[in-house]
Amino acid sequence: MNKYITLLIVIIFSGCINHNNNKNKREEIFNDIFVDIVDSTASDFRRIIGPFPKDLANEKNKKQFYKKIDSLKKINLPPLKVIINNTTYKLNLNGVKYRLKKYLNEIDIDEILNFKNSSVANELNLNLNNFSNEKYTFIYKHDLDSSVKQSRLGKYSFSELHFNKDNDICVFSYGLYYSSLNGSNFLCVLKKEKGVWQIFKIIEVGIS
Image (cartoon, rainbow, N blue to C red; front, top):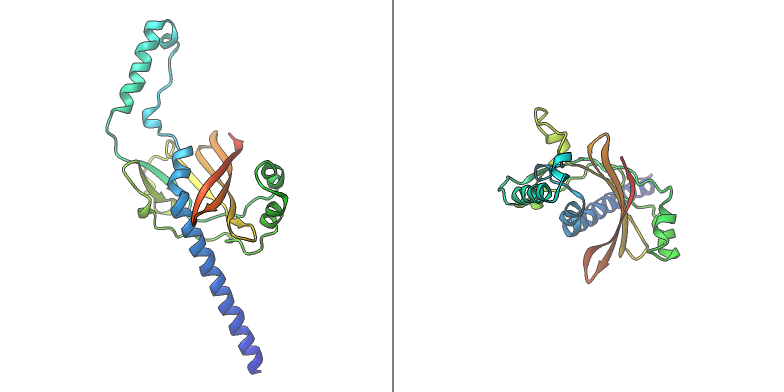
């Protein structure tokens, strides 16, 4: 009887260790690359205007339109609010091997696809205050005031993380949506160099 209790304790303890290791690894990765991901994909629609036909009618009108665009860059605005989905989702492995074969060797790809210890779909649990700066204010979706208009706010969702055997390559996907007809999905490849995770490649896999 005692041996079964001991075995149960070992299993539970091992599961807790794996959960904490996954959580710590995910925090380490996001601390290294989170703001870079947002910088590379987010758009501040407060500073973007589209031309009317008259704005492109002649060179004079074009110059005035481009001057208007430049003037928007000089306006002081509060940090852009960016919404983060508070749960991760399972990485869709369909097509991943095909997309990665240009950038990774076959052994690493197979290890990533067969990775069994991924951070399964759960709460993201990042301290978003650590990432907020003069450009962005990050807020979890479940903390967003329902009265706030969301149509022009970028909403990010992140998948679970998959690693190779040496834990120096990480692959995950993420989506950025502004509306049902304005969104993109990406596959992100990270490499750990000199103890720091860096973005190796971002592959756009879908757009709406």
